[in-house]
Amino acid sequence: MENHIRLYNEIADSVYQTENVNTDSSSEQVYVENMVLKMYKKFEKDSAIDPDLPLLKRDVHAKVLKSSLKSLPISYECLDASRTWLVYWILHSLWILNDMPDDETLSHTVEFLSQCQHPEGGYGGGPGQYSHLGTTYAAINALSIIGTDEAYDSIDRSSLQKFLWTVKEVDGSFALHIGGEQDIRGAYCAISVAKITNIYTDALFDKTAEWIVSCQTYEGGFGGCPGMEAHGGYAFCGIAGLALLNRTQLCDVDALLRWAVNRQMKTEGGFQGRTNKLVDGCYSFWQGGIFPIISAILSQENKELIETVLFNQGALQEYILICCQCNDGGLIDKPGKPRDIYHTCYGLSGLSVAQHGTGARDPFVVGSPSNELNRVHPLHNVAPHLVYNAIHYFIRHPPPVKDKN
Image (tube, rainbow, N blue to C red; front, side):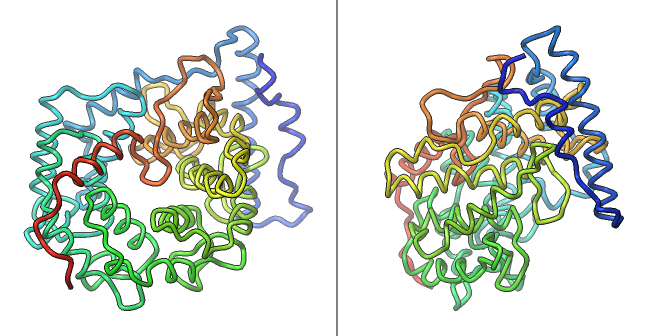
């Protein structure tokens, strides 16, 4: 077994200490650690026989994802308002696995996403639904992944820009939908969408960077809005949004780094979303994706820091590969949880970040060399060249409207 694999006994020494004070949270933490330790113990024995372990079950993951793109089980009925998200999660996962659907399926997907586009701009979660910044972000990302002229041309950028103006607030924040709540997700999704489709203007995002910075908490992470608790998803949206605006100098990067590194669980190897919470596979990206962004920020001052390892890449890969894979396809939150497309997408995204996210030329891959995944762009969570292709397509085809509220 290679030396980058943590030995079971070493991990067992770091288990949670209740100090004879039992709470619901501490009991749940001990329970999860015990499950994880059992899996690591079994892995230690298996890997002594098969040195290629842990192995990414890419074929079964791709099979489940391709099937889900065409038909979903009844359990997904509750996500009817998130169908554009499901398309993005599936396509992005398949891209990471380097196993995209055929051209006909992708063309049908463009047709479906066009039905989700609202006449007044943006995308709803499904056909005929009201526009929402989250589902708009998902649809634009999905179309960027497809990356054909048909996909690009299906986006009504004139009405999209009008929609962004409609949900823009005077303090620089963005409501997630007309009449909806303002939080940092809205700001990030609006920035990401505007950048990719070349409808960004300084006027549209006036005061947005300052509002995002007001969401940074005393812990160092970002909350959903000023005064809220620091959270992994919000922290990613905060630092990625500032990076896209080229305004990262406004926030306390050192405090964010300190907070983020302390969210990696010493026993499990994965990330928690908030202080004193359980490990969760989706934070492999929401927290893990923060580190390449910080590395890029630090590299602006010291070029050598671009390859600095800011978190334990091997431990994160072990958690995802050993504890979060279903044998019949799909990834999970943590042992004992059912698989779902959301955790499959962000588990694979986090695994890619852990392999490629330091900026080093050579990837760091735990287990078999076949485990290596395609790279993701940490600011958009789409492949870097697909972001580049979309941006340059839209630069060559500017929107036909002037920027005005």
